Image 1 (cartoon, rainbow, N blue to C red):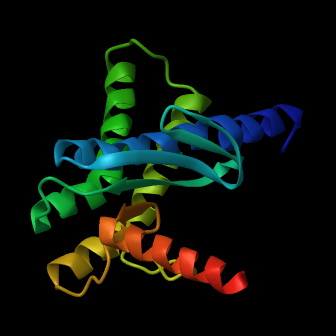
Image 2 (image 1 turned 180 degrees about the vertical axis):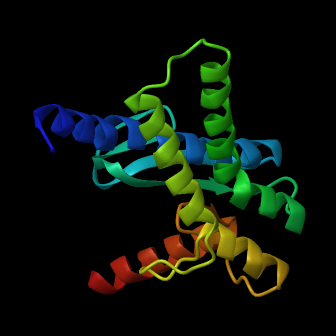
Length: 185
């Protein structure tokens, strides 16, 4: 029977554990972006309007719902570096699952509903990131982005939670905004 204690576990899972798993996934992407010389990195946790920004982390109203990371200019922009960047989130999720299991095995941690939920959400995040599909907004999953990359079919290096902001793209966007403003005047 689903009781009051189950509601507390449910809320802690969705409002604490799942955002932690999301941040771990995003840190995996940014780890490889950093290794390959990415600049102007930023993590966005959640969606909706911005609540606050701290250093290069932006927390949004619905912090428990998705996330993303952005960067500009890679020092090493090869097919292999891009593959590791796309897979970095899932690599970190897998590493966190193995680390929790290791801590339980070594008796540093007791198995609990919290460790189970953490591993469940980590696996769930990893599975849907690697499953080769397009999301409703048209962006590919990390797995599909890798597949497209190796098939030479990827137009821009985006996935659902990873955005590569090309400097030329940014300049074009700024110029288009300036033209729009000058038309309005």
